[in-house]
Image: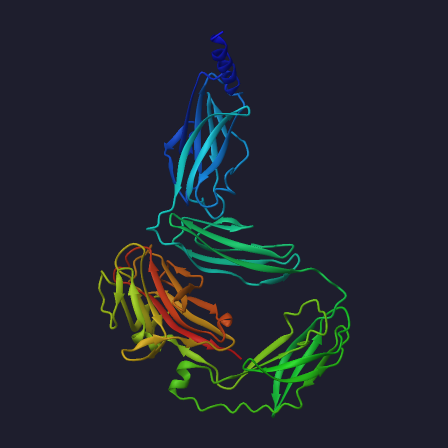
Length: 507
């Protein structure tokens, strides 16, 4: 009778692995071609590209039903993430080896303690614990730019996403285009309103940023008011408005703004499809009274008066596109600032540390100075900003430029008026060695946070290229500017040249 409990125990064990004679379960970084573990470890990081495990089950054969479950045991989100997968079939089966792979989510693995359970049938026959860790000594990645050229598009149109990330080992944009490089662009064609998120992951954690693109569905029975022109006749402001839609517009109001402050209204009578009309703000006396511009005024602000007129400003009409109702124009002297005027009072640093102007040519610290740039493509370019990074691979040098203020003098933010753009030419001096590429980058600093525009890269000293950036989104903000050069290899006697880097306000 004493044999019965032992017999029952043996019978209960049999279903666990009816044909297994031995097993060995190992976590690793890669599954080999024979489904064996490669790079065995039980420590992984937030930016690990995958977590793998390999099981060696003697006596099962390749047709055995063997599965794995990945389970979070302890850490943030353990309750909701306890079971990360259902029963996962093997990715690789060969000669009794069974390989399984767990891919990370877009925002990287969540730190904590995990285990992978090996299942035969519906029973767990073994498990292996592993840990995903966060390296707190590593700074989080920096998402310098994540933008779209248009946040509102019509169905079947495209928008272009642009991004620039520093310090990430893996970057993913969801819902598309997925895994991407540190900087670049991609076109997307959402059919409905879609939020895009960029995740930048390294061992220190995850940074992310989101934007939403609104998709306007096609309509054919609505008006669309478009202002095509704005001008001054003496003290009266006139504008030309057209209905580009397929239905008559309804009575509405046009608003006039002066430097973003509403000044007047004008009644706009209905327009038929395709009809165009000239309207006036007859009761508004336009007298800009431009101030006399001294040196200080030019340094800190625009003396131009911005006039913006918006049709259907009261939203009385439902249109096919309400984003094209406004037209603005700058009257008077325009803002035009060459950033090199303030290079001597900029805050300078290189990949070797902080620098103090004047910066003398030094192979360890790098060099920055105003001089004539000797260029193969265009001869001598006077009063250019020459930037020579330290003589090392991937070294950089940059200056943070603003209006000089205070004692001691420090750069202060520049007020950006409407309709501004940045323009410059960039090139490499004649004594730059061949085969070296230099990345030119414009950045802005606001409240201590630096945002970079897409870079221009040159590896040919025989030409210069134009570098332009749209600053319209910075209108009304106060920022400092960063001019940066980064070289893939030592430039020896050569330098990177910023030629006439200027902020220009347009009419």
